[in-house]
Length: 267
Image 1 (cartoon, rainbow, N blue to C red):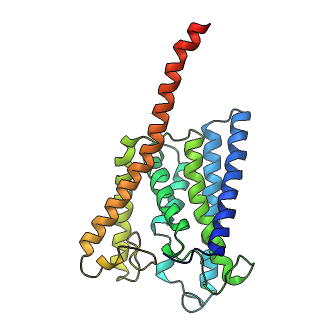
Image 2 (cartoon, rainbow, N blue to C red):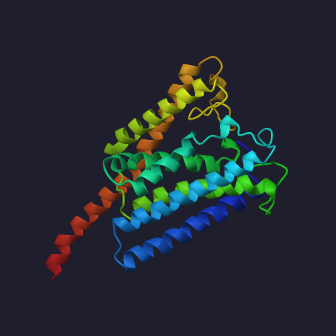
């Protein structure tokens, strides 16, 4: 699972503190000035541009570093087609292209992005987000460029889904699980095709070469079962991520409806 050390814990602290401050600030502005969906889309646009900027930083760093190969080369493994990379495209569509497609991918953008990103951030070895193991703090050094990039990037992938729900931009429903599943299947099929074209040098969406994968032992001899297990966990987690806020909203509405007759009688 990795080293749950001070760098990891302090990284989580400053990332989630930043997320909390931004949510409070933006939601307060939204409520105070009666902002609506246009404001929500602007927030998501800003988030989309922010993570694309960090993707550019990652690209420049890799081209000029020997950490992932020779200088001037870009390893195919770092191309933006992993599951967490889908935020680059999903948030861009939500922010800049409202419409039927944006509405369809909202469940994916909320549930799958939140679920996967929380796993990546919380489990240190899930994707190597801490960078060079010899750099044990958040000092401003070249070796910490990718860790900063990773935490800011993945932090944004947590911020946007939370903002979507808390602002009312998206209301999760357990019935939307199929939409998230269809979106995931489509992007997974594309990524799986890329893996084959790149002759197994990448594991886009399949998490075969990463760290901290408890099901990696299935890959060599039971690859089909491995994909089934991975898919099952993802779909179940998505249903839970959609179902919990849905249940909370339903119970809250029922409570409000029950309190209305009593308040009217008192009048």
